[in-house]
Length: 140
Image 1: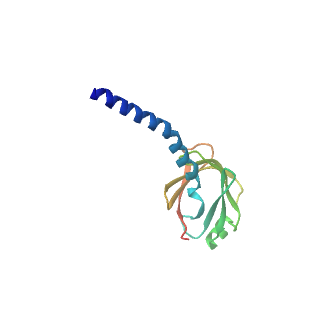
Image 2: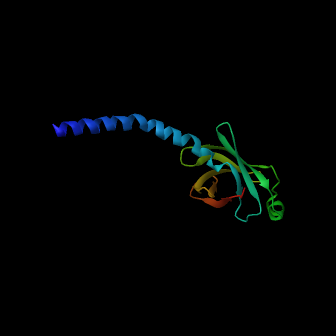
Image 3: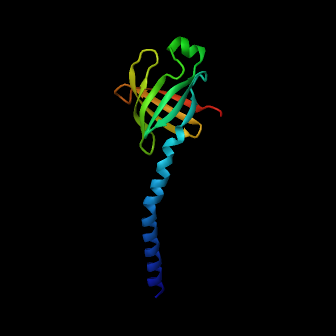
């Protein structure tokens, strides 16, 4: 008799877990894409980019420009740097980086390492041939 009760208990518990699982997964994935919104400092920490959202896509524009960035790379404030990134549940991909000086377009993928660290992988065609940048969240 005790075995039969425990089977019903675990069977009922399993059913509840299966019914609630899709709800929990959906709610956690809905808002995590917005974690990259805000200002991020480039490695040299002189210039920064602001990541913003339009519709379901993410974009980045130059927020602050260092003298070095202006002189060497032709960076200008409010210049579009990244466009059309989409969040797939793990990272942001499918977008393009627009080189400020040449106007060339490159594929870009973003990965959030922690709440303060964002990696940007930039490549042209082949992912294994890439350049990677680590950006840090700008203080508020």
